[in-house]
Amino acid sequence: MMRSWKFWVALGGVLGVVAMFSYGLMIDPKLVKSPLLDQPAPTFTVTRLNGTETLSLADLRGKSVVLNFWASWCVACREEARVLQEAYLDLDKGKGQARVIGIAIQDTPEAAQAFATRYGKTYFLALDNKIGEISLNFGLYGVPETFFIDLQGVIRFKKVGAVTRDEIYNYINQMTAMKESR
Amino acid sequence: MSATLGGRRLWAVGLLVAVLAIGGALSAQVVVREDPLDAEVRRIADMFRCPTCQAISVNDSEAAFSVQIKDKVRRMLLEGQSEEQIKDYFVSRYGEWILRAPKKQGLGLVLWVLPGGAVLGFGVWILNRAARRARDVRTARAGGGADDLTPEQRQRIERDLGRFEEGV
Image 1: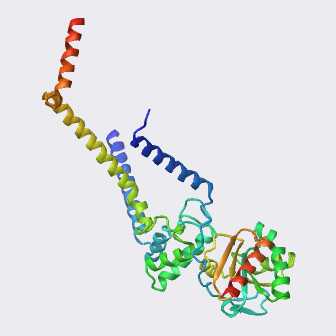
Image 2 (image 1 turned 135 degrees about the vertical axis):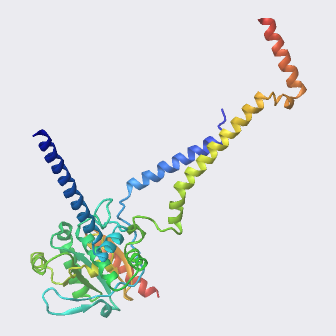
Image 3 (image 1 turned 180 degrees about the vertical axis):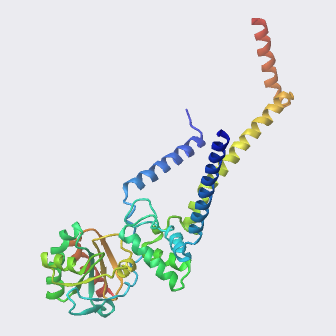
C-alpha cells in the first residue's frame, strides 16, 4: 500500500527530532568551540611564582607559546605536569622553538609552589589574581586547559583536559608550518 | 469572669496580629533597601550559565568561577559599562553558550520563534480542520452535495438502493 506524502513528512520530522536529541545526548555540552580561536590572545603581565621576574605575553611575539592553566588542587594537572616539563626542556630551554608558561588559578602561592616543587616544574609559573582576571579573559571552564598561541600572538588551538606530548608537538609543528607557508 | 478572659484573649490575638504586621512591614523594607548595585549584579549574573555546574545560573552558584564572574560583572558596572557591553564581553570569551537565553537574532531568533510558531501552526491546522468538517456536516444536512454526482454515480446509487430494498 502506498503511503501518502504526509506520512513521510511526519516520519521524517519525528526521525529528525530523535536524531537531534540523540546527538545532543552524545556530546559534552561544555565542549563548545572557543570563540577565541583564531583571535589575538588577551594580553597579560604576570610575576613569576618565586618573584624573580615578570613576563608580558605581548613581549613573546615571534615565538610559539604553550599557555597552560593549572591548579595545585587539580588531579588531571598532575597527569600532565611532567609532559609540560619535558616539553619545556626540549622546545623552550633546548631548541628555543616555543615558550612554555603555566598560570595557576584559584590557588595560593604556597600551594602552587609546593605542587611545582613536587612535580619538578622549572618553567615560568605564575598565579592568576584572586578575581581571575586572566582566567576569565581566556574564557576558562576549568583546569587543566592549554592554549597554543602562534608567533603573531593568535590563539590557534585549545586543549581541554590533560595535554599529551603528541598534542604539544603536533600543534607546535602546525603553527611553525603556518609561519613557513606565509 | 469569663467575659474578662474573653477580653484578654481578644487583646492577645490583636497583639499577635500587630506584631506580625509590623514584622512583615519591616522585612518588606529590608528587601526594598537592597543595594541597587547588588541587585543589578544579581540580575545580570542570572543571565549567565555557571561554567562549572549543571543547569544553574552564575547567580545561583557559589562555585569559584561563578564568584569570579559576579566580581567581574560588579567591576564592569562600577566602570560604567552597560548590560550589553557586559554580555558582549562574556560572549566573546565563552561564546553564546554562556547566555541562558539565546540572543533574539540569527539562529537564536529561530529558537525563540519556533516553539510559538509550532503551537500557532498546530492551532491553525486544528481550526481549519474543524471548520472544514463543520462545513461538510452543514452541506450534508442541507442535502447539498447530491448535485455534484455524475449521472453514472446517481444511477449506481439508485441501483444499489433498489437491490438493498429487494433484499430486505
